[in-house]
Length: 532
Image 1 (cartoon, rainbow, N blue to C red):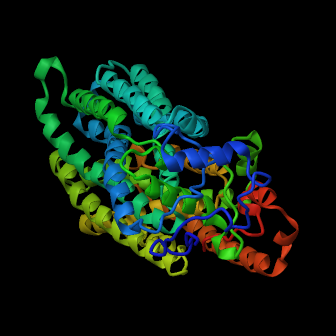
Image 2: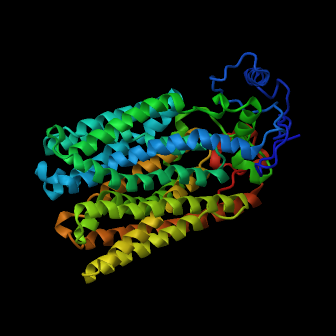
Image 3: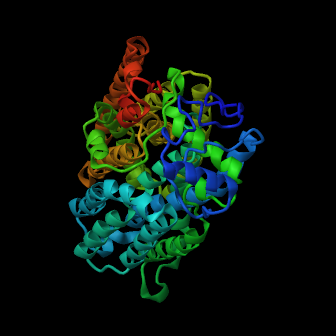
């Protein structure tokens, strides 16, 4: 009997004879057979030993309950990952809250100096993302992710002690270095546990923490600002210090809570491990009628293939159409609201309903996207239509600002735009992760897109200049331009994926290639089908 790869609800015994293999020693390496037998019997292989070549073959998974197994994974993985990203987004964006609590005045920053401090973060953040993702598997997620978290928490705490523009600038540079591996690392980490049709909801749950961070940031900044004068420090300094210390505390806990890989997870039985690993190995080719295991070994050519893949560059344009508005909102929303005539305190509090609503919508849209993917429908509408909402929101903000005297319209526009940003972002990451095959190509490709894509944050941090306040017409206009570009890229990706899938279905090229050759081709294999 064979483990079905079409639906999690269909699960039977796994056999090496299925997928075009035999159980003979001629076809399987001695090491692989021994590893599988030892794992199945539980005699030699430790639960802490990760074997990237193990595919779960030879283990009966007929009694595995898919829903129960996924629920166990969700409860053990998602809350900790959400907490990590909440703190990451909180720490990188709290400079916006600190600004309206006196940071700019106390450090005597000009508008361009503040913008440079906000911008410089993204250059080091971009530069270190690919190396970080490649090191993630080597050093294990439970070691690497908490370690970089301790580093950025320490930097954030010390940022509360800076006395000058240059001190703040240097601190932001090192904050970018330390935080670089968190988001691409976690986004890639989820692909080690969940199949393509399950990823959007998990990306949405984890990313919705960013929405909560936005709301929590305003609320927390409002409360911490009341400490102004305590210990001779300003309220904005306490924002950096306390949020940085919280990050370090959570990071220490993460060392003991995070799990590394499905085959080393102590909360899964041997049968559950086999079920999880097996379907991950064969998911890319399951719709072609010939199942080929995904390659797991590292070679530099997979990094090169990722960096030269056409789909990454189209996806990058789409990513910019989402991330420029995202960072524009996170860095400047309190300032935008304050310039509408509200006090600093009210501006902080008015950000909360925006982010909370966006978090709920992100989860609903991502759940719907997964449901569509499981039924064989397309993912792209669940990115395209939220991006249309971003466009409508910024058009409203631009029109309201240009007219003047209608702060409610500007606020409503920013509200609608944010509610489009947060569902679109995890949808974009899920779509590209679905369509990159080969573990290390996916690691490099996702890091490349997120890293280079976050240069959009560097751009967005200069969209809302102090010389343009209170209307910020230039900032709103630039956001509209990037969203429009992203919408065009989204449509282009969908059309090209559909064309390539149709061509591969007709070609029959896979017949002359071995499974090893097909695995090495990754998503360029004739048996691989792109998620639309």
